[in-house]
Structures are given as C-alpha cells and as structure tokens.
Image (cartoon, rainbow, N blue to C red; front, side):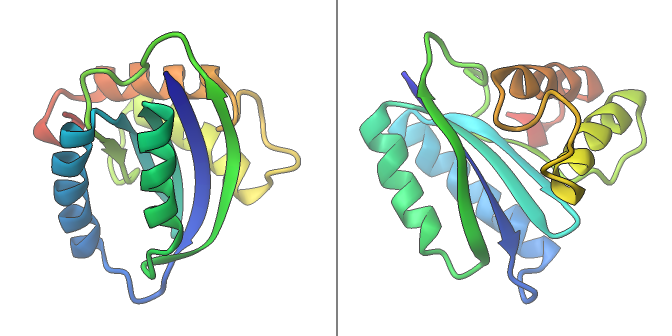
Length: 148
C-alpha cells in the first residue's frame, strides 16, 4: 500500500461548481482503481492525500500534474503504508464552508500550513497524523454523501 500527498493552486477560472463535478468523476474512477483519499480545498489551494497500489496512485498523479484546473503542483510526501486511512471514502472532501468545532480545528491545521508552510503547526499535511486527524474530524462532522 502506498500514499502520496501533494498541494496545488486552483486556476482562477476553476469554479466551485466544477469542483463538485470533478469530485463525482474522481470518485467513480478511484473506485474502479481501488484508490481512496481526501481532498481539502482552502482559499484556492488544494491539499490531497491519495492511497492505494503504488503504480495506480503514481499513474493517477501523472494525470493530476497535467490537469489545467490547477498549477504549482508540489509533492509533499509519499511513502509505503501498512493500511489505508480512508478505506471507506473514494474521496473525502472538505471546502471549509461550515462552522462546526471539528471543522474549525481542521481549518486551523490546514490554514497554518497553507498560509505559513515553513512555520505551520504540527501536524502538517506531510504527516500521517494530520490525515488521521482530518479523517476523524470529517467523520465526526457529518456522514453526508460528500464524505463517501
């Protein structure tokens, strides 16, 4: 099992409605490829965690890198892992538009990294603990269809 974490900047022309459409397609393709993960969208920046077979994840990431809907694609980390973190979600997603306690904590973690990556608080998106925390907070926030 393999995981990869990257960040990127959304293109200015990439609209909120297009993110929803992208997620729907990604979930179908990820299910076919047995890839799971989480996508966080905060103030025009994406942080994404992908997990699955290494060849399939890297192949998907090759496609992601060339997608014109974002720029400045930067790998933050990649590693072998013992088990999936998001095994029930083809692609968990959060855009930080709500206002729950769980979401506020996740927003704090994410914003500290995006706004000041060299000084961001721990854990940060390069750590597995960050994504485990994100998973717990998203699960606690809601079990709506956005989090499948």
